[in-house]
Image (cartoon, rainbow over all chains, first blue to last red; front, side, top):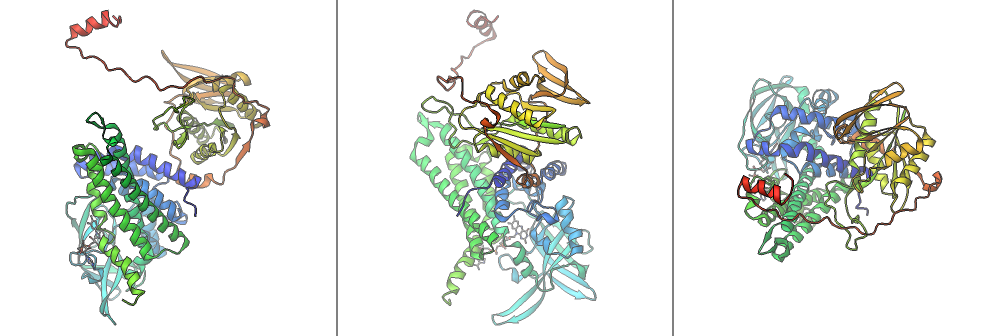
Length: 387
Length: 249
Ligand SMILES: Cc1cc2nc3c(=O)[nH]c(=O)nc-3n(C[C@H](O)[C@H](O)[C@H](O)COP(=O)(O)OP(=O)(O)OC[C@H]3O[C@@H](n4cnc5c(N)ncnc54)[C@H](O)[C@@H]3O)c2cc1C
């Protein structure tokens, strides 16, 4: 096994880190304090990200991306993850991989403009009544002549306010299975401005200031049949094929922020003096640093092992669930200890720690809660025993 | 025209320098290394001249250990066309570097060599000038602006009193100052392409240069910590101290 980075990977890490430090960090305080990301700022940083080839680098080369393998992509995500989420997601966007599943016409309309930085996507699955249990969704699409008619509500939909279109998952019928009735789900592209489709402001959120979520309402929203993404009734199959690695993306961004919190903590423990010596001289503080670094390393190894297996084609759902679970829980722990080491200063928004601590909270909830990840991991073991 | 850009691998400018416990030099083990920032500016300037259609090939050259290859890859990822690594172990002093670069210049025949005005490790600020002397070429050091006009080069220099503009005949040597340009990021597509660009390895012997150091470092020390200052109670006291203690006014 080789855990070292290639020269190329190191250069990508260096460029991404330099970009994050020079172009994103200086604007963090503004976004955190106003809770708002100005479009002029987005346009300015986006242009630089495009010039540096960092924009949409998750995409294959054939469609205008950087063509990174999974490990390298995760290295890049880890660096971006250090910064305020709204800034890196919006200004250095990584369009959803699911756009690659579209037809040629859909790629022209949605994928390429997203890669060129002309459009933003958003992905709508969750509903007020259907979170972890997505199959329980009520929003529906019914065929009517050559069209589909959409009705229902989605909520918690990230950055739908600035998105030009939504990829919406809708119930399109039911089927009988040995374990009872099961909803059939279909994915659709819905453009902003389609009559019957509206986007309302969502909730104010403790994590990721400036990164909005919205409520999507469908009221007899009529769209043509060529807006179906993938096959009819095969929405979850499309999602599973293209969105599996987003859990690793969540994990990788958590690694970046944990690393940043740890760096601050080491610096502070060495500099801050109380009782006539640096606080790091106390094992009560230094052992925290040791445990933080060890947890971070463990999570790092798990995320990158899963990424490596992804490239080999041997990754399992459990590998990705474990990596997401460990990285997100690790970040919560590291962020909390970082604040403890900084004392009161850790809570002040002069330092990025209070926000890393707040931001850590959502990571254990979105992209599948920690409990759902544990469910995936344990189910695989128990099923093998027929349980 | 061909441009030669020497690049040096140095301790990253963000790293807090520590002196080795035996005083033999600066700690380099497990320290992040990067391209000398003035050399980044040199690479950027060369790329701009290429983009402006003035230059057609940029050759990056580094003298140093095997790992200096990483620095060359950075130059290639920024936009240099090919690279030469002259492998050396241990310290190479500015004069030896200048002699090696003279060898490269004679082999490659560039019209312009752009160097950093100094490397941030030893701040010697000698290589460019020595190289100009060895080659017998014109030099424009501490450049804040470079304009090629046919066979001539106009270099604006940052000097103590302001800006000085010199008119040079090519081939020439330019050394870069901080304000010459803002180096670009090595872009992801260029990083991917950099792997396929040629990187030749050479040895000092190929140029018939003896790189044995001529200087002996006696001691390396941490700079003295700043002594605590004093607080003055009034302007009158300040003026008095400046007059009678500091002797400045
Ligand atoms: C800021 C933010 C942005 C989001 N962005 C998007 C988006 O862009 N698109 C989108 O579609 N969704 C988005 N989501 C939704 C997110 O994916 C859901 O919040 C998540 O799936 C959990 O659903 P829920 O909040 O309804 O919680 P619930 O599913 O109601 O869960 C409540 C609690 O019950 C536990 N629980 C539920 N079922 C089980 C079980 N079987 N076993 C054990 N425990 C269980 C959960 O772990 C949790 O602790 C976003 C959420 C947030 C907070």
